[in-house]
Length: 142
Image (tube, rainbow, N blue to C red; front, side, top):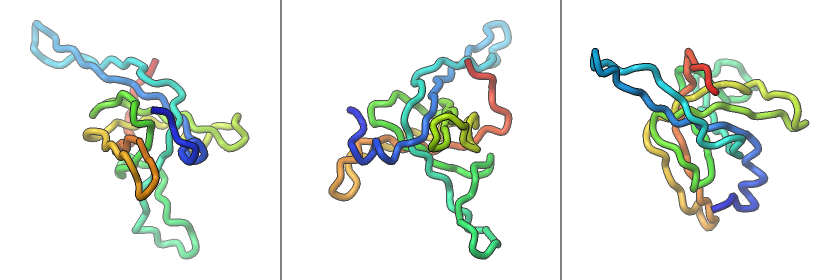
């Protein structure tokens, strides 16, 4: 199901979603290298960054920029195919539609199963909420 009118206004970020597979080496029985397959390209989404409760600066915003130590969220359409362990790459642009955002190119791994939300209050939400963690050493993605 497509985004509703409210979501089209709010979901201004873009991301790619990659599935992750890992083969097993038959001779050793050990896992091989991960391979990545693009599942969704330039998907409209909404990033929700974790609040920074440790901020010591008066008058500054309380939003923690993404780091490898925080769990953040990304909201996507409900019919998006995504699973635990998959990769989300931020492709967000600034409002001019050309300049890369400060988080452009960051790579996150999905942690846990997506959380489906059918409604939010009296509004139809129809979305998946993914818990994501920024990767310290992101892979080279196709």
